[in-house]
Image (cartoon, rainbow, N blue to C red):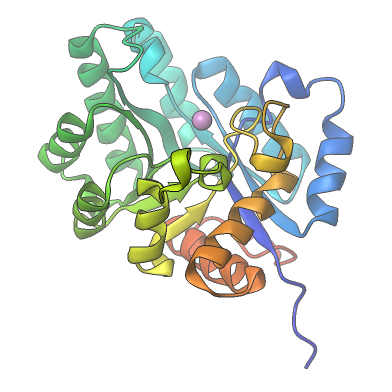
Length: 273
Ligand code: NI
């Protein structure tokens, strides 16, 4: 039997962002040409979550998540949470997020971020959906809240992972995965190996998901420009280089991991039930 074409899944793309408004069809075409067979469009507030769902309804290989970024936690009004809950029930919604804590920019006060984070974890648990976590300089609180809210029962991913090897192991022990993005391709400073490279080398390959977080964080050859799902292959290539495995193998293993975490995400070409 002929082997299926190697495919990659961009598990974190903001194709709902205004920067894709003008040329989204061309962006989608380049992704398909690059072997990106499925794309998870991630919401960060109610309107962007709605837009993610609209895109997922229009394209068979696009999937949506509904979330509220910690920057907007101060706007976590009852109406916003109700609308997220309604959208989360849609069959093409595969996760709740992004949600989490961001103590680096602190655009919402930490107590309000924690409150909103807890509510989104509970929403995910109610619906049996996994979580997409945004964590910046909040390692201890993020993991503690997930533990207190028993999020290990639904699973999830620490998107755009930037912690050290020790924290990576604690995340994996908790049963969550690590999302790896463009920064893995950036040359390390002063020739020393980056902590992120150490993480990628030392954890099981099955623990990794590949993401772009586009339009941000374009990988090295495109650094500084708008990122897009086709470039997720550059992330896979660097993971493969660090671990000494072919890029296609990284695609296979990370795609399988994505489908385990997001059971609603069907392989490309498979009919939706
Ligand atoms: Ni994001």
